[in-house]
Image 1 (cartoon, rainbow, N blue to C red):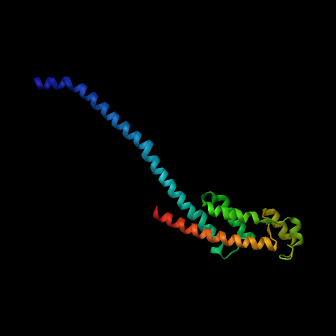
Image 2: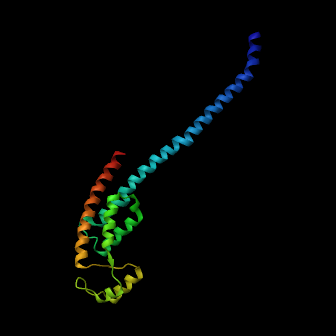
Image 3: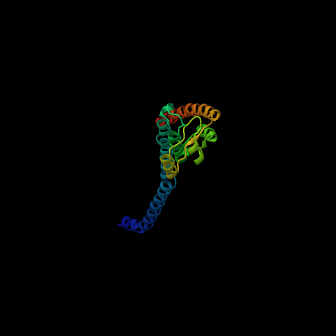
Amino acid sequence: MENYNLSKKVSPWLTVVYIIIGAAVSLTVTVLTQLYLIPSREIKLHMYQQKEYRVTRLYQPLLVSTGYGNFSMTAPGVFFKVNKIMESYGYLADQEVVEKYIEFLKLVRFANYNDLRKGNFIQKPASENLIIELIRQGVTPLKWTPSSLEEALKVEEEFQNVLRKHYEKAVEDLKNS
């Protein structure tokens, strides 16, 4: 009976100690989970998503819109598709791809209304209906001179080679993650 009375006297203090230890363990686990484990997992998920977007939203659409190098970016339709992709997802591109694209952009000149009406020795004049539709859509055809077109084709070929190289690297990187 004495042992029973002794354990009753120690029991409230021991209960308080257990509660404090339980609270400390619970707080430690919560802090560890909220401040380290969850953000770490979210960062890994975000990095994987960035790698996936690099392949699926940037490099694959660029390759498809250029016909895997078979369509020339000097054509307005192809150029504006590539331009739209680069404006939307260019931040995902590797530096070398961006540099080649900017090099190509420096060579691009847009035709104005008089160029469309007159034409040149490479292109015949556009019809009035086509000019009205182009103005309505806000898409201006590209204007090339023989020297700028030749230079643009060289830069475009380099761009395509760099694009394919970085696409393969991005696909491999995505598979390994």
